[in-house]
Image (cartoon, rainbow, N blue to C red; front, top):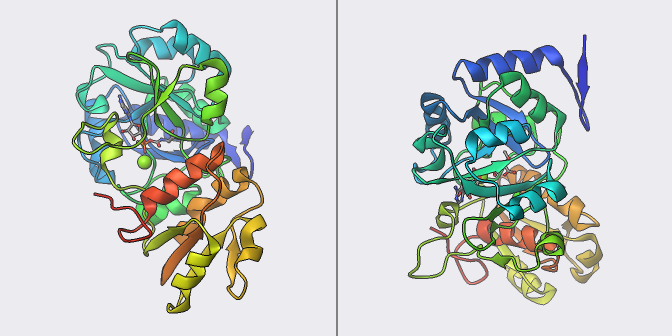
Length: 330
Ligand code: TXA
Ligand code: MG
């Protein structure tokens, strides 16, 4: 039997065919991408997309990313491909960069939450691409977690949130954090930090702006910025320095303390979990660690906000609990 080789797991071609058949029939199927697992449905089928919103408990004003297998499919969902988009696609596709462009009439309102623009990306994953190709339709897919929870990086995470759902198991995902989202409606602006770093985008688009946080009294640049994200099931606090983490830890019990390998030695007297040596490793481990901590509190020693570190800190701050050391979220 023909099998597709992923990082950890071989996926039989027949599984992809079955899943593609379900997508074509308007069902929802979870599948791996190079970032995280997605909860997929035919992006052009209103009823199918509604199922995704219902399953996830996702607010109707938060649009979905539409996944395509190449240029021809892209043109079915996007009206206009400006030069900037060409530049970014040549550099980063297939890969973890989502681009917001004007949509065609083929994309129903529900997929884009009533907007005239649509978020599109071509994933760099044999299973995801094979599924889209076999289905023959673009696949709308948010992260395959219940709204507000951490994104899934394994099939087991998906099943934790959605028991009984069909998931194509492709093993652990490569990046572990979501795609970077950039809008090309007007001047280029990054709306969500992600697996492609700002530094890399600036190499090809030096003028790009960043608007990843909601400012008080203004409308969010992207609807997703309004909602709480990536929350573990226990309180989480981020500390910039070891001394304040240690002070907090003194009076508490049942703590899971997380730190980058090179900073663990600063936490003398405490038992810290090694998040990884490099930022890439930390990103890959992050959601799994947050999900697997089911009691007590999580304390994290901050990592430097450069490159992928900026994305990791963004996720940790959004996951953090309200309070002195965390940020309030709605
Ligand atoms: O890596 C990823 O991007 C994964 C995999 C499955 O591809 N998907 C993912 O989707 O993270 P989701 O739905 O969890 O996050 C999509 C983000 C949300 O913050 C949403 O508000 C924003 O993209 N978004 C989607 N369409 C948009 C649009 N037309 N305008 C502005 N923001 C948009
Ligand atoms: Mg999500």
